[in-house]
Image 1 (cartoon, rainbow, N blue to C red):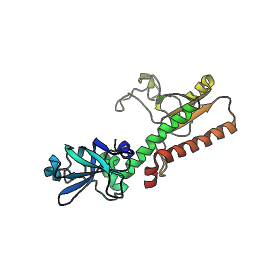
Image 2 (cartoon, one colour):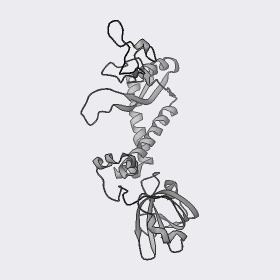
Image 3 (cartoon, rainbow, N blue to C red):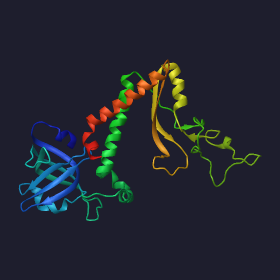
Image 4 (cartoon, helix red, strand yellow):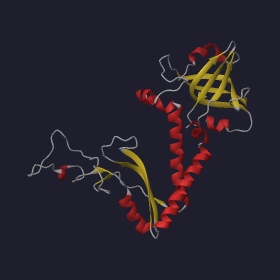
Length: 279
């Protein structure tokens, strides 16, 4: 991965870089190609000159194309990067034509929403999902290091855990021809589960049960809220962390919460510094 290559301390005689072209700049007898594979915010600069067999077809290596590059990784002559790759072999894995919509400029969120299949290649979404991935890993590390049991709670349930809003119903019944009871109500005894079922709003009920047998447990998974809201912070689907601790008082709960937040911030600063700088 490019992240690992950029972190190396010594030159490498032969290295393979695979990713997508961010930009290509052509000079008289050589070209600069910036390649990114999503593993980090930075790109690997590739120098392609006439000694590379594929240099004659360099015009085919356009922005957005996927490539595989073999070459020597040497100290960069520029100031913006530590290493660069002098290509000895260049392979066009997948070409992108002139209609490729992501270019080396700032794109608005509204525009990126129109090309959702390419959003992960943008700097913003790439950084956001790298940080999210690292934080999810750190969440598990935090609880596992403290002896918590990870509990997978049901996503489909008949329990309204919090009773604070509407739940998304899950059914196999045909909405165009619903079975009815004598009272004219939907007969959910004919449904897959034999009763009403919903997407969970919380794993708390199951976590509390497990805490009464395993002491310290946590659940970390998707939850769903069918609530009408027009605020920018409302989400119908989100992942929620719910620890439950037996033999613990409010002070212990507060200490755990504080340690949890500090742990995640420290981990993100250590492992996602480049992405956080971009934000």
